[in-house]
Length: 383
Image 1 (cartoon, rainbow, N blue to C red):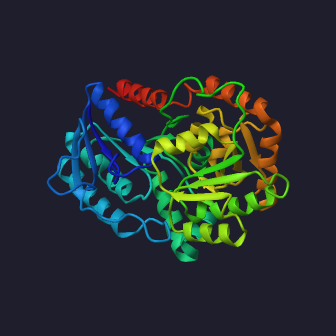
Image 2: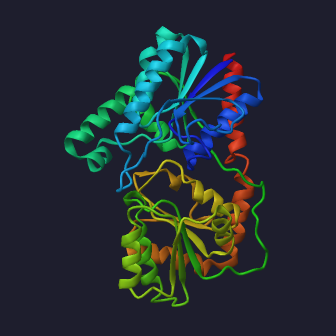
Image 3: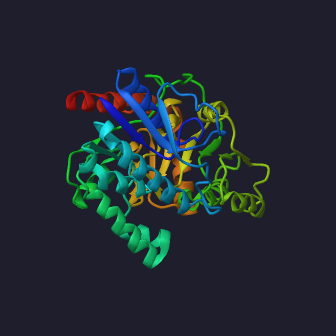
């Protein structure tokens, strides 16, 4: 089949869950003999080879995608959507299928508008679908209403949809999706068994890894560590990543007297993060919004339990069985997070053993290869 993949980022030139997913889809479909074209924004030096085994077409220039506050800038997706529209207007009849990510919507609107003219089937990856309340918080009353209406219009375009959580699949159906929804359970690239050392106690270190943006609520972890250290003074923290909230994180570390107990090294190599997870007491992900929560699976693969927060927009809670591979804290308050950290500490080796067993039982379901096989099977069926 002739397949057009549409995403404004390309791994490894930019790194994230969506980038890993689309690169994996492109590599897998190419390996199966499909003719793959990947539409994106240029993220490599002009004239350079992007370094892939499939055709890459840059339909827009190299642009900074995020504001200083960590939100998506409006101009890059507009230009990308225009570039996708022009490309599909000219070449849409070349393709049997166009597969695009949903957010930030302009490329999906372009593909949806040209679907009948081009004669291609439309496949959409909905990693998240936001509520009107979240749109209001994100863009204000007027901007949020517009964003929600655009999202709703996109959900009602005839399409085949893939989601990474039951939360967002249910929301998509409720918005009036006209097409089939398939929930893919994983995007993890890792071993089938947890990489743990039996009979070895973890260090008293709590780890966070991710972007320091308001949705991740990283400062909440600093306050929680200060509260937990009242009961367990030997607890330490390692907070990896960077973003607009990092300055506030560093201020809190100093204000709460945690300079010798909490390290905030910024972005580091993946190998260092994985090594930290293997020896950590637990991972804490205090996010209010997660479309999936890949780092939770990565922690489980190291035999390390995780703490996430119950929130209407947090799909990472679907990856936790309370008391089996971690805990779902009722809120991101310092007391609730501190209590969850101390519960992990009190559970000791037993919780680590059950975390490793949970991962072994679910590794295949949570793997990137399993999800890619389901996508490839959908294409084989369509062919």
